[in-house]
Length: 542
Image (cartoon, rainbow, N blue to C red; front, side):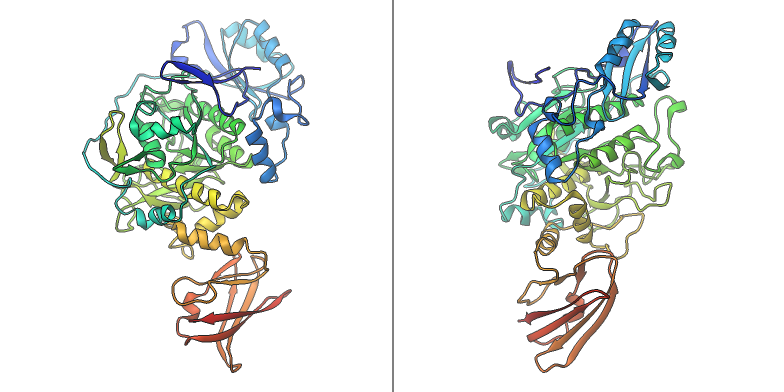
């Protein structure tokens, strides 16, 4: 079994926790020799795998197994490593194994045409994908404006970051994987020193170049990590106490379909390590080779490899948060992939006036689903550069870690919540939940509202009204089940009917504050009735 290591400065230390992943990792296909091409092979089954469903400890970390158990997710054949017997037979044909994917039961090989044709005739090979093509490099640019904020955005209260910190919630115990294009400076800057001294970097790896050094290449991952995790006198990340996995999957200088497979491998690594959240500030629509580019019709949540992988990650118990894209003011205008995936939380951008940022990509998906799912501030966001200075940037890349941070705060606060319930409560806390659209989705969430909704949702009583007693602000009624017609009646202490309301619920939470705002202070009885249930709640308005 391979023991994965992490590198800090010049010292090598054991990975904490140990992550068990397949023995094969991606390497940069730019180095391929002319006589060899690279192919993805899909295999028919996993006969001969070295893993066992009954003993997952050889290929999953204890944290990963625990996370699956908490989410009631069964370990199945997708978790098992690719058959070693099949890999040996492929090697015998002279091909080089580049990487494997257990979720897709696939293997990437480097082979000559004759070797490839021979391998296609092996009885366990199902289908293949044609040769990868790598194009010339592109230049990237950074905008530099010096500033001195306390948070990544001056309007942090808008989504409840400040309030979350005032409640003592900062991501402790939550493991977040970031997939990006490089993390230079994160091993040396004082703003990230606490992550290393407190052992909060659980694992890091350059999937794209098959090496341990992620502290070079493009700066984008550093910006994202600063929004989430920085801790300095003049800058505070959203969840600086969380633990992190840093994975480079994106080659900033090119745009190739290979990067989708990089991300697939990174998601499998994150799963093996036990990640709770994957924050994905990237997306794909067109590639340097036009023949491999997507059309809008492909944004259906199932065509791209990366959207398939993102939904697989969710099925394994990980919440995937992804940038919607920055094509809102281009001819493409729509979201990219994996933002189109069914279970991904696609994040758009708003400005300080709660207007959709012009650049923020829109929906719907090609099959008619609402996207983006929600929004967060993404205009004029402060980030930390690898040299330690601050600058202002724009993009859904920056709104994505803000949502990832809020989710981490909720997971710290309510670790027993299922991912389905947490996503639902987060969307219910958004400011246009009742009227979602394809510009901003369900709108912008607020941490304190999500937190309150979760408190009601997790109450053991079948029906709950909170807060109780109540003075002003938000008032929520929890009902036993969703997708049912409820009749709600409010009687005063004289038995007079003051409110009569009916709603066919799509969730288990009904907002009540508009219904009772005209009531005078006093004692009330609230009757909650459906076809199969009737309850009477005592409630006090101060």
